[in-house]
Image 1 (cartoon, rainbow, N blue to C red):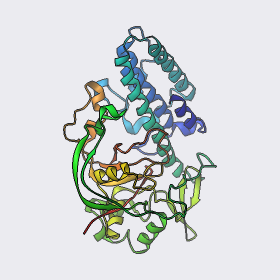
Image 2: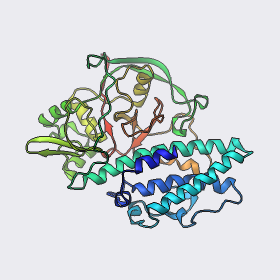
Image 3: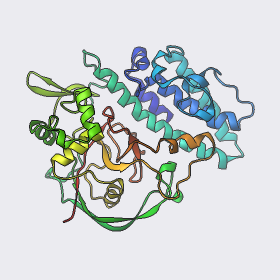
Image 4: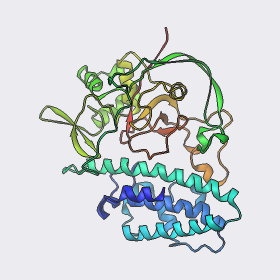
Length: 385
């Protein structure tokens, strides 16, 4: 798991790893160091009496938002951390890896060590994805249109042999959602498992495509206030949205900035880099709505959704809030999810940047409604009449 982080960072120069293109993004070097600090802070310091830190100052530089863990560098100022450099960051990772390996091999306390190692690895997978989303945002600000990987290609669709989507996914009735502790690893926001009652609804089997989005644009989607939530329309006007994030019109043709550089828009691919506001407006224009996260999970568990995983995160109409009976983890780790359960919307599935093994039907991703730099797309739904 730790090696995957380094594999993703390998194509990047020292300059690439230091850039912070907006307050919501973080430099790749910071991501590499932060996930290392996580193991140091929550595993080594509490459980290894003779542990000697690589550099005590790193606790301030690479803490993210854990107030109980002490003061931290302001998030919008992470790009100012020019030191440590890339080589010293790698040495920090090696130092912590060696200490964690020794702890795993010698501990008599596996019931304490294992859960923290497990959450640390899953936490690192989240940052592996963020490394790519944040880097793409930085590259999109560069007029030379740099490619993270010139050979990058969009994942192949899981549609049938004829390339056509199957029938819509019909769901209704009482279902169990969420994650039970015995089902394997889950974050606390996926628990507890609980029953829900669904009214009859149909989810589109396929994701909304670039071609469908172009029809929305041609029909005045970005110029018709009646399609938009009030805050969404404010964002359209304030930020000048005319198309999804990273789209550019060049000589009358649409292109998009991708991990492979600037590429022509492929009409058959899922639309990507759209905000919740855009997804909601498109749904209104289509005469449909976004699925709730519960509807999405039930359909995904039934295998009734094409490309549910590995393409784009899919916006739902569900606000990010705790499940019935939710309790946060004790101590500083309780800040991981619970304190963010307000003013954000849930996305389901996973994206092309999500590491292998990090996807499941119960996974709850969440972002603020205007966010567009993530690999976020749209799946529609409609109630049975």
